[in-house]
Image (cartoon, rainbow, N blue to C red; front, side, top):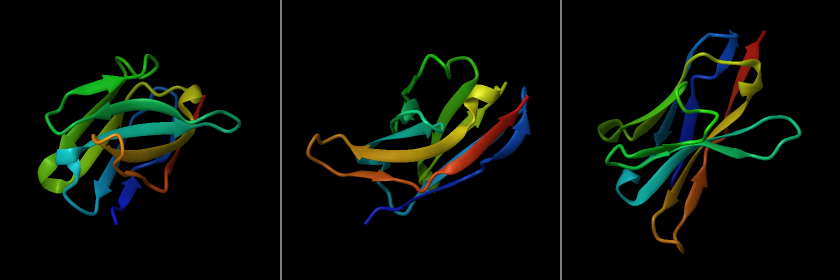
Length: 118
């Protein structure tokens, strides 16, 4: 069973930065897309950014230019660098890994809270 453990959330003022980490319990990155999602109170969970083993990444429009996703395959860890944070970035951030196989598995972390004050 794959486990994903997030860390790095916290409270910052607008304009500040945080780095989130997502560490997998096994070497799954060769067969998965790993993404960061977020869910604000009363809103649906949304994709922030996703990445594959090669480093190829996609970003939501709200993340482009401010957030950077990266991967360390040796450490089974994906990072999300959050810069120029805004109050509207406040949410629980979740890490998720899904297999390339459309009938394959998908796993979620427990989430980490990011709170941005104005």
